[in-house]
Length: 316
Image (tube, rainbow, N blue to C red):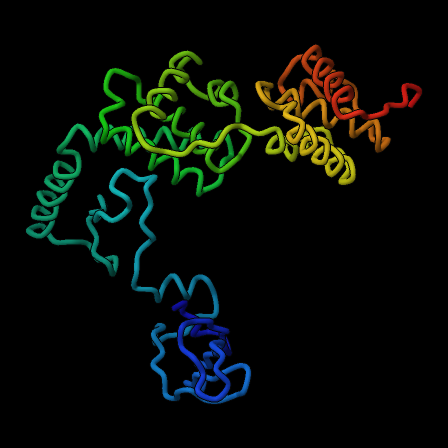
């Protein structure tokens, strides 16, 4: 159950049934310690135990200072963020200088602690890969959940020994690309390759090897996923974006999108929607935002207009 110690009450739906009305929606009042039915008001139980902390905090600094737990576990760190750290400063928790005898013991503990952390080649590989993952994710601006998914994909690839014989940078780039595909975030492979030191061919080989080597469900790229990003770059209005989405849905029902590049379909749909909604952009601007050629935009535009029966006013 979620800890809501600082709130007045919480609506909870569970398997427990009220004896008065037979409903299963209750309210937890942590101030009074009561478990009350929200339908008939029957107090199901009282003097409930508060599982939250015994202290209160009114600012973020107080909460961090009084909390007795560490940061959450994450896959983007080689040791998942659960290992201990011995500081290089020879001072205790109160800031006092450590004496000579204790300082020698701390030095030996620190040395063996570092040796125990990097005792295997797999851990060293993870340390280098997670640093590269943090750098690449920061350059691309991907969210935290995508980073966690990319780290999980890389760990599975390392466990399956798919990294052997390939550069760490190419496998990390492939993991980030697949994670973006899974979360339906439009990041083309060429954009990811530009932020790495490896060529597109190596990253493409790593992508195919990961997909065939581990069990992950990677959805196909969709033109609808590219609409928000391309329209944001072109600063289109909301009605134009809505119309372009409708055009893509109609094209999908007519099987026009099969075998076509998502960027071309999205660009052509935005071009048609801009003409219909009087929010027009040139084919050159749309091609640059969609990262395709003007010829592709023109061909997809003609095909969508012909198949969907859209009437375009040439004079507009």
